[in-house]
Length: 284
Image (cartoon, rainbow, N blue to C red):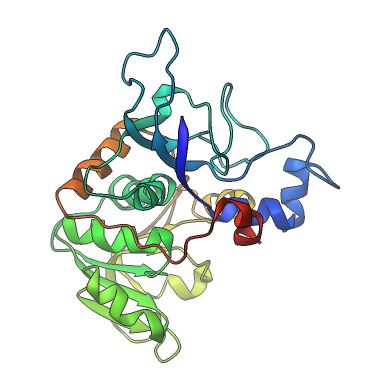
């Protein structure tokens, strides 16, 4: 496919920087053991299709992933990174691009959108009218989580810095908290479901859910995701639930995000766009 836009994820930053040290165990202790093109998430148009491809034809606008895992050094067979003019992608990793999104907006959806959806629906088991808090509400996963929780009918509180308060309100949060002025874990208010994307300590976080509330920990890096999933392995604190979570590739879920975007219920928030020749600097 011809790539029109690709988005960088935390794993790309860790891959470029080689930190934390655990990342070097995955990619190679000195330099990466094998060459890799940055960016798993992308959007563009099908340039050519193999004989066994049945879902797409040349010219189709698509978006999705070039690989399903969090390891940039191990792409799936017949795939390449998105920071390139062309990428060879397995058709099961693509879906039609939402007609009302630009290529840049569509490229920002896959991993962050799937993470938010699965954290809320699968790990958090979100229900209408619940009180839901998203910690890190102005980040990639957080902005999707706020919008998705709102679409599920929840009352949403977003935690972010002062400069992003209006942004988080604009995407649907009912309440916003400036974390530099207020600690949501010590204010006395409790929530049915908390999605934490910024590695807040567990002892602090456990003060914020209700007695039967649920806490979902989302890790943003290859190492961080595994550590957070281990921290949140199925345990019960009083009656609170700490749910394990790692994002899974699911084409049906990406189609759902497409439908929500086309219905006007999901709008990607893009911080900044870079030309292809500045991709390494954007990830650094």
